[in-house]
Image (cartoon, rainbow, N blue to C red; front, side, top):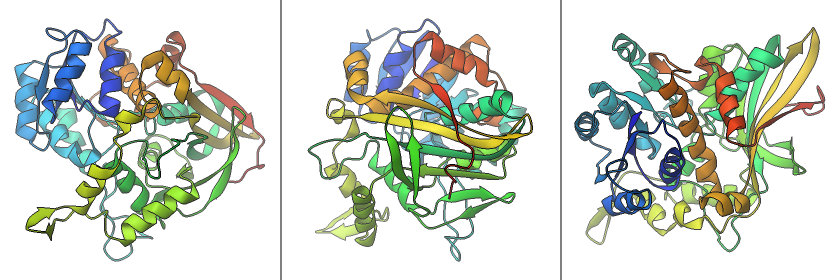
Length: 408
């Protein structure tokens, strides 16, 4: 497979390094707004002809199209902030290439009832173009990271093997991960952190999507691997928009273990207006407050050896099997120090980046195929989990006592 990788930051670097280990990756262009960073990574991977590097302005759809055509790529892999989804998405389509991302097009809250009714939902702009992708016979695989991504594969696997009826699907992201010595250090892009955490979270219930207040419905979820109960709160996330499109649950939620201190800091950022993206005049210079915040926040790619603890991401499914209530939690657990020792990659970057690499191999071998705008649930989960097993990547499913822990 010939790939154009757009973005070689925390996750993009992981994608490139992990792809380099596989024969299916015939050729991968490393493109980034910081062409020096792209060249450094390319050199580490052996450079041209297999890993050429170049600069790119991912805001420019025509630049994506031109680069994809110039290298005759099969797939455009989007590994940049979700604010740039649409130009990369449309640029790939114009180039007649397949496309993959790990976060979907951004939402816009309803102007009248933002905490009750969705406005523009995550992925709406992409799904609106599904017919065009399908008519061209091209695939846009959206939300194919860790979460969303593997969490959706877990949901599809549960539906296929563990349940006769699925009633609820709840993704829970937590663990005991920390970055000692930093007062405020998001584990991924500050842009993505703000979008996910300060936008109105979406819940699927009673056959429709609803919104609620950020950080609502606190719940102590009992994470496995000896971690135990951790407080999780509602956060806007793609699984809630993806799962109901292919499965038929009554309820879907996503909750993240942010921690009270981190939530307080995000609330302060919002109260001060530092999450604003409109430009303000500062001593004769126009600048967006969020760009200032990004500039002074530690770059997650630089913190790989600073992480301690474990990240656990999984999918809690409630339903019926053989007429009896059943609950399962399928999850992936990664230990930060172990991942750094083995891969020299930041744990969240590795955990996110491994999944598009698995999906690209399935597309390259024909195990997965399709056309249109599709989420991970649209594909057979078995070959995906088989590749995780082949590569020794931890994943597990545990049974939970039905009714012992009610999702809120």
